[in-house]
Image (cartoon, rainbow, N blue to C red; front, side):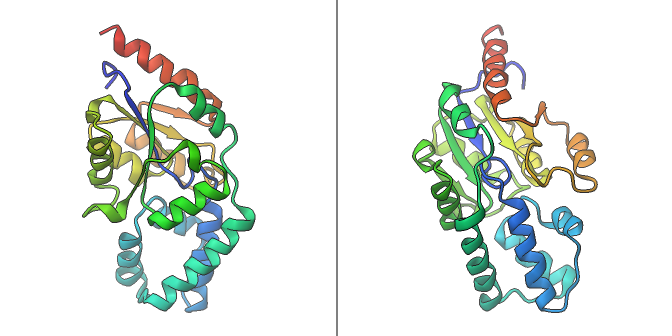
Length: 229
């Protein structure tokens, strides 16, 4: 993908724009424990990081025999949103990075649209990222490429001209399947859980970085490389 010139930067939300994954996993582990299902946070990261709600429900039922009915999901949502309003923070440097990129940006997240908007609102990022796409808008969530292809189509940019900023193996696999350049961000609080880095290495993203200010020169370098071909 090195010969493509970036015309769109697509951000995942959770774990990329906002440092939400530790809160989300904590809420999920507690909800499962309340049903008598024991799962460690490392196991929860491995199974659920970057997955859509539909995929999460399917894994809960098929692997853990947990029926995620509406009461269960509403309890998770209520607890999660309450904690987001008091605890959620943007990734360090993300606002300045978006402002400095000089490339159109959008958000493509596995989360429900109301959760994405809440996350961006409480962290002050919503005005910078008005174009939001959710896995609920497509048939298949990550690791299928559908969401990223949908976002590129709506933003009227060819997949080869997109850079995706992702933190999860499922998201990186989805961006790869979409034929896009992938920058793996490893600066979130969850990036040290067991096996995470090994899984990222296996997927071979074009770039791995752990501080948002780095994104500015990484995108500029990609633009220079693209214009040289």
